[in-house]
Image (cartoon, rainbow, N blue to C red):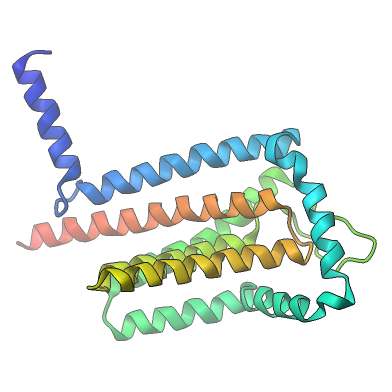
Length: 241
């Protein structure tokens, strides 16, 4: 490699890692997250279609969980899971997203508000399209706890939760000044996503791979929205200087 070519490569890398430029670190991180999520989702989707890999254990795990969920000894946990899953239904997500949107509007966080309005409603529509693409049937039981006629892969509840709590975690990390506050925010939001996913599996509404696929789908779409809005904001601010 010539000296001139080497210099160009170094300048390109420096530009991609610059924290405050239009096409800097935020874009590099966003593209990396999108690429990783897409590759992992593609591999998981292949397992689902072929019923191989992780998907080969889906039925076993679902029936094992259903044994506990349908037992009177676990009724308290079952009720808790029902409350959690209903709180993150379409109606619940409208309320939760509306509450976060109101908070961001009150704080005049217009770019975060835009990212929220693009990510959650857009992600819910994307999930419907992906469901119809794969048309995977839901787990079947003789005594189901929930009766659903829609497709299974990937989980809509989990995808929406990933988007909502993922955006909330991103916002809190950017706003918090202390490291432990950031860690607590990320862990709390991650716990909510995991709990929503667990509730869907526990109630027999989804297979484990439906949950994993939904998290990857949500993470990828959230990265698209936050990266896109951040790039647009930086461009507008650059033109205003």
